[in-house]
Image (cartoon, rainbow, N blue to C red; front, top):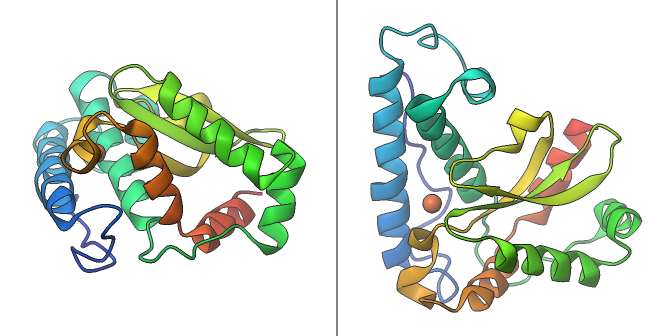
Length: 195
Ligand SMILES: [Fe+2]
């Protein structure tokens, strides 16, 4: 099997009380696993069999694109979550955020507004554009900024399976909780690596 489900970088209950172990149990072991399994089935016998995620996401269409993008985006989402609620934007990355958004507060507010503007399933992304500036964009369903030539730095999974067990229709509460869990040191590393 070419693509495998990565282990969570923390214990299943480690994000509580913000994201429950039950949500992670379903989200990681069931939903995410389905995309990986489907992707492995779909690439068999195609020109994508030996290609990496980035190539498949940029070029493939239909179910192959959907499952590759969803598998990649889930890895990207889970890897940037860090237990605890002391995760804050600081240092040089705080300066970069201020340069692009004015303030850390306005950055957070803009991100939160984007999550409410998304209709249906999708993802809110922090990306780096070709001018070296950060933007917040929404993508529906399996949509991925790699396809638009943008570099993803952070993503919030806005599919109901990511939050419904814990928050039902209280999307703002999910996003507020998610914000506490972001590993900003990793986001800063992604930002520095991309520039
Ligand atoms: Fe998800």
